[in-house]
Length: 268
Figure 1 (cartoon, rainbow, N blue to C red):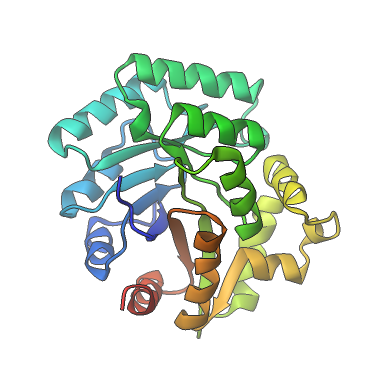
Figure 2: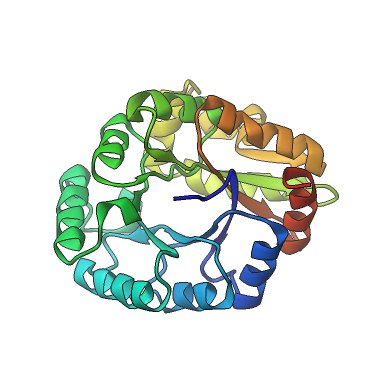
């Protein structure tokens, strides 16, 4: 698996095939399709078809919303048409998002059992993981972990838990000048601070309850901002902490312009 050091993360509703082709040309090593894409993975396949060689991963398919056998059939359809290009990112989601949420660890294990029984190899699965137990499971059962809404503090902890070999690919949000961090950061942080799994993860990182009310120091850590060079330097802290790959989510009025500016530094 060669994802390179940096990839581009956007929600499934935000990607277009043309945008994906442009991102590949900029030099990003992977394309991440977030926002719980449906089990048919048709939008993901369209992105793969529009690009030449870049790996494409879901970040992530929600286990409560997507039948594992249907997901496996979609995986095989994509693999037959685009061998070696697709990685299936899976996640349990949030307790607040479904009335059925229960025994999350057992549900993750059972879901992995079912997709693997349907022929999806473990080394083509990536698991959304925040806490120690699921991070260990990701290292043992899958290619690795895709933590979301974390900082390099979490990356360092995750690498220690997962050992040296598993993929560790955290997401990080950025705002590039001249877009307004003051306008973009609060709504893109506060929505996640209402979710118990992210709150628990931040407390494990060492943040305190006052930070979880939306402190400026937390928002500055979660949503990087500045010019392309300063943002690139901050993203590299994940690599220094043990990440293999950083999934960059550019916020703002024209994300493609932001990705291009950042690429000139990251890959220049």
